[in-house]
Length: 500
Ligand SMILES: Nc1ncnc2c1ncn2[C@@H]1O[C@H](COP(=O)(O)OP(=O)(O)OP(=O)(O)O)[C@@H](O)[C@H]1O
Ligand SMILES: [Mg+2]
Image 1 (cartoon, helix red, strand yellow):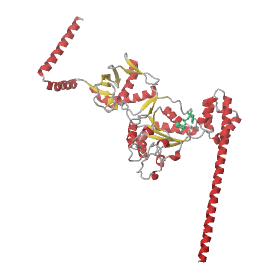
Image 2 (tube, protein in one colour; image 1 turned 45 degrees about the vertical axis):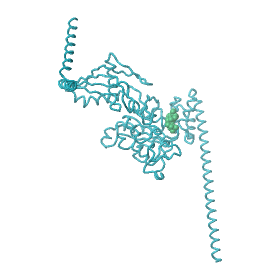
Image 3 (cartoon, protein in one colour; image 1 turned 135 degrees about the horizontal axis):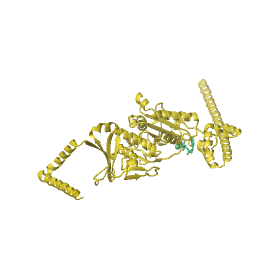
Image 4 (cartoon, helix red, strand yellow; image 1 turned 30 degrees about the vertical axis):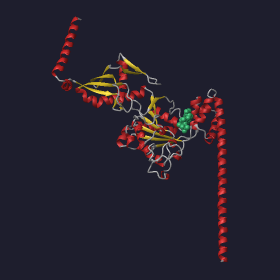
């Protein structure tokens, strides 16, 4: 023990001597340069190189930092002895992480690397466009120089891929929203996220099975199509337009798509976005393997006909301007249709990859043809009123009924009224939920509701037809009396001419 203390004392002595020598031999102005030189010499002779991966890279969040954190959380959970545990708000999983200034050894293709989590207190901020976190966090990766190329060329990509897989497998998918408009939070994100836990799947979605199968096949084809998109020079993205009356399952379909592919959802609230550049910023901050959704596109963007714009230039449209507000190109607080189209189609839409755009609307007829033209939205999906096959799915989901469980008469009665009733799956679900503990009552009540609705829509159609016929008759009468008046005028004119 005594020897150890003696050695320590001599090391301290040498250190103090070195310090005083440095102070005496080198004047203050040379001291910094000489330290730098020592450092260079040390690095030159050292067999290691070091890479710093800071949490914030300039003003943006460093994706690599997040990926490393997640990647190490899987190794840390097995090998670490002192770990930091975190559980995100509303999240169902616990994430392990390296404690502050702790280290972890990892190996890749025979090379050993060392990760250190470095946390330091940030110096008091002088001036910054946005508040930065108080702690400065980062990872330092120590690698043998001979493995440098392996690490830079493959290991970091491997870490990124593994982190993405881990997030999809272990963590809840995320639902992002831009409720702050385009402004950034302290970590440089314009999006706020919550874990996404919507239970809708393609199994629970009531719609025509053939159409459902077609959509699922299309989604799978897209998700597995990296090589195809690369080969054909197309951006790896796909657009779906979901249209149909309220309550036919458009939002449920989006949730089912996300659950099917394991993608995050970015729910873009267009009315919160003020300018095209904000829109672009939001797009740049979305990750791959995600669905970018604009719900009720006809309500968030005023899509009047291009040619009716009066003094408006090119493709410019007000977005979410309050009724009566003039907006226009000279108003800075507008985004334009061309901005939106660039968002989905232009060069910017290709930053990142494997992204799906979904627009929904209740009124497809209100959309500009520019949004509908082929190639813009790859698939138009009509979510319609409940059909017989869709009803069978709802009966199975809510009451546990298989198709064969229903009496033949009941099936026939349902078949006779389901289409004319024009009831949405949401309406039908309501009746079934209410009576789910009493199956026969549920079926009887649903049948009654369908019959009433069918009768109502028959009468409505009849009424509409009568009104139409009446209007036609009136039009014919008006045209007849106009013609008669013209003839009388002509005869009167002819009479005058003869008198003259
Ligand atoms: N096709 C469907 N299959 C299963 N459930 C459905 C379907 N359509 C509607 N529902 C039920 O009705 C509710 C409302 O549906 P959803 O929000 O998906 O409709 P929507 O078409 O998005 O309506 P809106 O146009 O008003 O946004 C859902 O919670 C779901 O329970
Ligand atoms: Mg909806």
